[in-house]
Structures are given as structure tokens and as C-alpha cells.
Length: 537
View 1 (cartoon, rainbow, N blue to C red):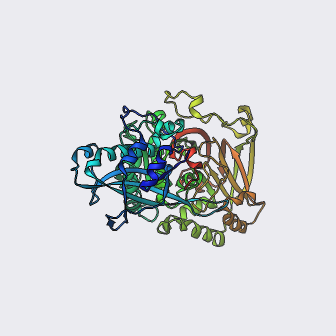
View 2: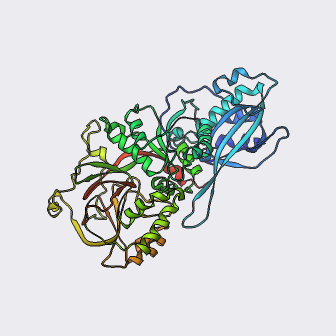
View 3: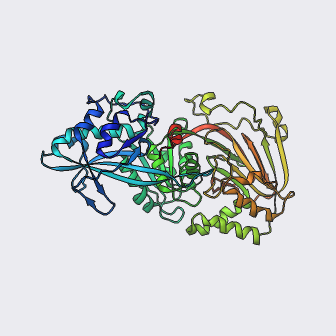
């Protein structure tokens, strides 16, 4: 079956009856609508295409365009007046006079590959297509609108995958999805509000998403909001900011007495910070360009997907819950020192590293212990496969012994690395930033951390330069000066108690840390597997 929908009237009448793609989605709550066969509906309508640019609209002569859109790119459809004002869908069939002119708007984020080859990514542009019709056709157009929104809605994917053709489906009207949007107005370059209003809000509006927008006013504000969040109300809670903003959401979910249910709340991210590691990781997995429009598209078309969360515990028995990284040695100092350069956005890290490599003469002595992984071993079980989902007992670090030298009693083999380090970077996901592809083999939900470290006894500080240059494409793991290991648990003990330790980009007091991954504990919105593999754009 084809997965493209023709946008000119002649092609639509001939092709739409066999149009189907492979979106994934969830069960539908509303009773099915009684409708005509889709092909008969399109044949009867014979809509005229009109062109609208972002600044003006031309009505009148039909333009026969041979253009196709993949259903995976379509956001939704809306009925508008001739002046472009939205017509409330439930009233549309009863408000149009026979002589009045209306528009059916079809909206999409059209994809094309940014480049070919190994690192091919999809670049997207927001597309608005308008079809002119008369008021006497309102009932039929309203029915077509329902068809388009049903087929474009990611919650319909499971039904679409099972159907052998579009005409075998029955469109169902669903309540709009509800998103809670928390905007950090000072994250990164301080453009969170503009980013959302100019690039994200239009995508959500076209996709029929109701967004409750709140702008945070102080550090920890997002955590406070999440602690009072009603469960099972929002389809997604998302942050417009950086990884620190999303960390506040995670800490808020895990600090609740009902954390075991709260942590299953799907979360999302629109990159507006300095590093944006999770956003880059999700977009990379989805083969999408690292851009705000692509991130908004992933949220609008996405479905919940498990994500690993690690418990990180310090010497004071405080616990932080991490979805991203732990940093020590050069990378932690650079992260903290470059805070004053936030106005530079992601460039702050490059400037900070250059200063550290050429002007800082500092050794980082300490000991790392990690649970060795057997590549042939059975993958770790998902957290709620082995733990009671109704239990509010917090995740235990049951792979870690009090004394690392006695850890063998827990099963598995623990390795010890003692000495001077240039860098130690522990990742749960692939990217720490757009140009930091730190853990190329990581998955969102594989149940592992990936430790990258450089032993100062094996290489000079200058080896940091080629390592960082190779990191953009994940090629640093093949360098002789770099050690890269996969593990489910580790312990870290810096020799200096005042060494900076950063969890998900935020300072976390030591002087020692221990951590264990809980596979698939949380959920994040990302493109479903079938949508990722679609290459029709």
C-alpha cells in the first residue's frame, strides 16, 4: 500500500482509497462515525486547490499541483473561513450558508533528507495547503476533515497497521491531546518563550493539541509544578529548555509519594538550552535534524517510549535520578566554568574546553569501579517486569555492595581503575550535546550506562583535542587514548573531596557517588519505530 496522500483534487480522487501508512497508536474512546466510502466522498467533493503563503492568500483559479505528502508527515486538517479564521469543527456542518466560500486547510511538516549517506537526517518545513469549497459542501468536507485527522493522529496507528486499506477503517473523533508545556525563559540563550511561540505552538495547533503553557519563574519551579500534577490528565509534560529543566521534571516525579505511577507520565523536550542532550538523542534515533521544528514534529506525532533512569547516590545518602549523564574531571569543570557563557548557547562548551586544555594544569586522581558487562549476556529486565508496579518502595541499588572489593558476592565481575584521569563521562543516551555523540551504541531503554574515560597515565592532556574533534560523529571510541565500557552499575571516588561532580549537567555533592540503571523506568515521547523507518519523505 502507498503511504502518500495526493494533495491535488484529481490525484486525491483516484489515489486516496488505497492510501495507508504505518503509524502506531492507541485505542480509541469515542464511538465510530457512520461515514461514506472515502473514495466516493473525494469524488463527490472535487475540491479546488488554493495557495497560501505565510504572508498572503490567493483565492480563485485552481492550481493543479502534482504533489504528494506522506501520511507520516501530516499534522491535521481544519476548516477555515475565506479570510482564514478557524471554524469550530462541531459547528461547521450547521453554520455554513450555501453561497459562502470556505477553506479546508491541511497542515504538515514535510520531510526531505538533509544529506545522503552515513549521517543522513531529515530536514522539515512547515507546509500549509488550502482547498476551497462552498458552504453547501460543508457536511462532506467535515467528514473529510475527520478522515484526515484520524489518519494523521498517532493514536490511530495500531488500527492503521492492522487494516489492509484505508476504506477498511472507520474514522473516530477523539478528544484533543493535552500537553503541559513548561518554558524555562532563561535556558540557553534565553529565547525559550520566542522559540515556543514561533516554532512549536503552530505545530501543536495544526495537530489539534491543547497546550497548557506555564513559564517558570525560579529554579525548582518545574519540580514544584510536577509535585502537584494530576496523573492521567496530560498526554505529555514537556520542557522548553535544556536538560537541567527536564531534570527538574524527573526529580519532581520521583519525589512524589506515588512516584511509581507518576514516573510513567510521558515527558518530552523542545531544545532551548545549552546542551540539549536528550533532544539530540531522540532526534538522532528518529533520523531527524537537530532543529526545533523537528522536535515539535516528534512530539506531535510521537508515542510513549520507555527510557532508562539511573539512581545516583552520594556519600550523604542523597539520591538524584538521572536520564542523561554523570561528569567528572575536565568535562565537569568545563560544564561548571562555562555557566557564565550561557549566552553563547552550545558554543560555551567549546570555548570552555579550549580554555581548560591550554590554560588549566590540573590532575584528577581517583578510583572508578564498574560492573563488567558480558556482551553475550541476556539483556537486563525492564524495571516493572521484576518489580511490583503498585509498590511505592524506591528503586534499590541492589547491584552495588557497600565495599567494592566485596562486590563479587553480588554476582558478576567488578573492575577497578585507579589513577589520574583527564576525563570521565558516563552516559545513559547517545548525545550530551549536538556535537557530543558520546555513546554511539546507547539506546533510550537498553538498561546500560556507557562510561568514556581517558587515563592520564596512558596519554597526554593534548589528546583531549583530537578526542573531542572525533566525538561529533562518535568516532572517538575507536581512539587508542579512549576507554569506552558498558555497565549496569558503577562507583566513583575522586581523591579530592571538592572535585566537581555533575549529574545531568547539575552539580551534585560527593565526595563519592554510586549509580545503578533501572531499565525503562520512565517514558518519553518519540517517533514510533514504524514511523522512524518510513523513508517516503
